[in-house]
Amino acid sequence: MTPLDSPKKIWQAMTAADRILSATILAVSIAWGVGAHGSEQGAVAVVLLGNEECARVPLDRDAFIPLQGRLGPIDLEVHGGAIAVVRSDCPNHVCTAMGWKRATGDVLACVPNGLFVRIEGGAAGAQAPDAVAR
Amino acid sequence: MRARALLVAAFVFLPLLFLPSCARESRHESAPGVVRIFTRSGLVMGTTAEIKVAAVDSTRAESALAAAYAELERVEALATIHTPESEASRLNAAAGNGELVETSADLDAILTAAVRAAEESGGAFDPTIGPIVRLWGFPGRPVLPDSAAVRKLLPLVGYQRLIRAAPAEGTAPRWRLADRGMQIDLGGIACGYGIDRAAQILRRTTPDFLINIGGDILVSGQRPDAKPWTVAIQHPRDPSTFLMTLHLPSGIAISTSGDYEHFAILNGVRRHHILDPHTGYPAEHLCSVTILAPDGVRCDAWSKAAFVLGPERGLQAVEEDPDLEGVFVSEADGGKLIVRETTGIARLRSTAPAQADRSNG
Image 1 (cartoon, chains in turn brown, green):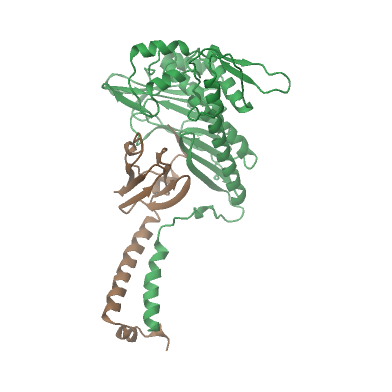
Image 2: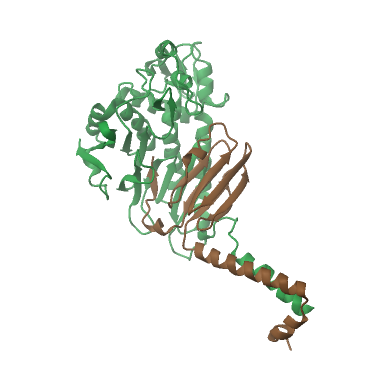
């Protein structure tokens, strides 16, 4: 008999603490997995610090992303399908004034802090222009 | 015990399959023979940069992207006035002392193109506007300068006193600024030159690419689906939408200058960064100008020149130049936008202007 072909015996062999831990991990796994699959079709913010990619953040899940820029802390927030720089230790705060970005091709940047964020992969991506003259 | 370990291990590692990746993009792994877009993004020349290459071979594409990006950084290093050791800063430091400063072929090309654009536009673009830009504090912390200070510095602006000494055989080009206090500021043209240089690098690998440096763009070839590259023009008053989208043929650069990119509210008045070299104050009458040209350096300079010239003189100058096309946006009373465009724009446009009146030049 292999260990996995008798779940009932496995369950009986587990202590109460094992059962609580397993149930918790299972619940988190399912919740995270469902959320991640949902984001595959949605927009993703590609985050670069110092011209190196450091994260890919799905925009369909609210999140707070603290980062360390060249000059100091810089915080990103994802809310309602959009992303913004909500705090940056930089001289002019042009980045925080850029507001919330949600469309494929949109960018956020903090040049002094070395931050670059590009949104890609959204449903509108196929129709989005290849670039925007601004 | 073994069963428990397996079960717990499965639950622990299962979620890791769904974690968002922090590694390099995997979309670069393409099937053999399939043309894909390879992208490199980042910050260079004080702004955002994105280069897209349509290619089959990921190794060659990545190598070309890295080389093009390095070229942009090289041009930035020689043309910036924000580091004292750059070539441009050395020329500024020698202003008025009679010394001819040796320059590289790159700075020589930038300055030559800048003087040409200044001559063509009657000084609406002027690379010697440095003292005025510094007085206003753009692009960092803008301040409303005292009018007396503007009047005092304005005589230092004059491209006619940016002088090139023709190099003797085998020697480097040399330039000088005639008067003490003069300063070049190549922010309005170096980006375009960098784009042209990066394009030269990319063409060694592929004819199909798009370079976008802070909204100054050059396209070459076509997209992987064999369609033209599409470039939208930012709506000057609604950042969530576009004024229009253009399908660009190969070898076209497009640049927009607008009053919405770098501005500050000073004493209750909106002041933007496109300064008129003749007055020392932000140019009025337009919200944005988009210029199309066969190369980035001319496109970059002319987007500033046309903005300063305004809707009538600017449109006429661009229309009369067979190499240029343009879209001019001004704001009427009540906030209604008026869009004027040269005759060649219509065949490139795929969407009608949003919420605006349109007329041809």
